Length: 329
Image (cartoon, rainbow, N blue to C red; front, side):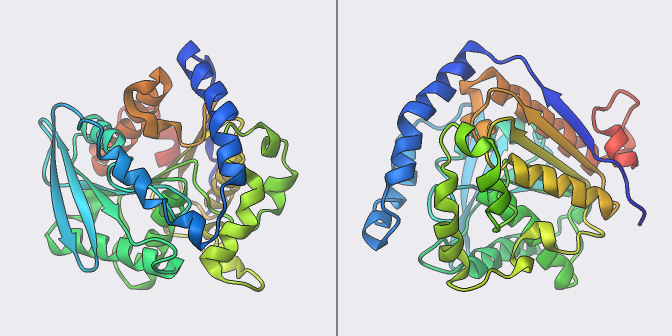
């Protein structure tokens, strides 16, 4: 397929609430994540992050249903009036070592409402319990679960934030390798797509990122892939992207992983894959996960819902669709 031009959309206008969240993250989260010991002892408390999130009240007007899958769990989120003939398969972020169903429950509830589809959130096994390949196997198994249930792949969209954005692409690539059909689309929010940290370390955003320290990336990469030279093909940006479905990428203007989103947009376009990249000013890494906390998070989830509706029902596209240019190539 011939190359296409990615649609790059810069979103300005930063709310007061977003400025407060950015400043608070800069003041408190960045020092914590910079100096937190990433050793066996320091990783012991990480499951508590999702456990503490379980104490929060569930979103209103959404039903949740746990699903037992081989070796891991999932959770359906169904907003009111969803259509049951499709699904969003969601992979949470957390650097492959933290977070889970509870930390992302409010976001997936909002995505379900905006997209008009149920969302299956995947609690894939994480480091150090399994290597990265184990996390990917769980995500692929969750996709097989949807296909085995009779869902049409043209009504399934992969989505994820940060490490989960990596898994959204990696699962689509693994599905292609296994001879499984591609989903209708991929949504990746602040995705970590390139294990080579060279460009991110040299980028001005290494100092600007509200809370994600670029200095931890080499260690996390070793944790994911082991010691020694990093295989370029472990990074989705370096894989053969031809034949992937339409993609929506979102990134914060000042976050370090903006580099990965921009590089992926370029390489998707070169591979002939329709892609829209949105760059949001004044936001923190993976800001849509904050759900209703920020007006920008709500707006981003509205965009995600619109994209999902477009790719799962192409006949509904109109000249006013914000994703028409990308989908048309």
